[in-house]
Length: 150
Image 1 (cartoon, rainbow, N blue to C red):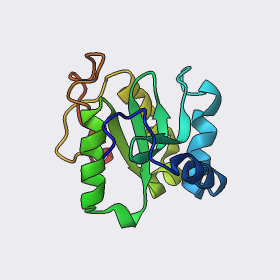
Image 2: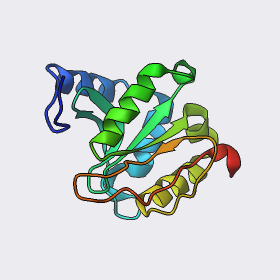
Image 3: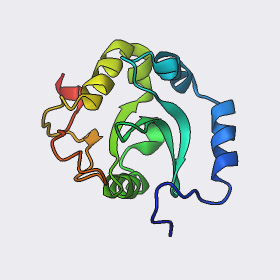
Image 4: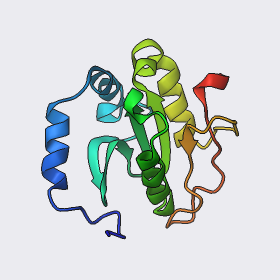
């Protein structure tokens, strides 16, 4: 198993390139809002290999992973393990359903910005999994977010 998030699994770069070339509509629309530091100057990359995984969107400076999920991710145990691994390596994970990006894009962007700025509060529905403690000592003060409560 790969313990270092900067070390990529064999073939991860090629898989990430393939994913970038075959964006879903929600991925394409969100990338249009995040690319080129368009969200308050925060730099994002898309389909970024992190250890064993590939993050849909990643802000390296703030250690934030943003994931877009379709129905196949409902109740996924694999996602839970992935989130745990990312959290253990200092990354917060923020998730949205695909339809939220299409129909509520402004709210999605505001939520991403709130996560980047550490302004999310506790919520019963876990859609934001903050890192408990990042390698640089950050992350412990972030809360949880569920769009169902806003």
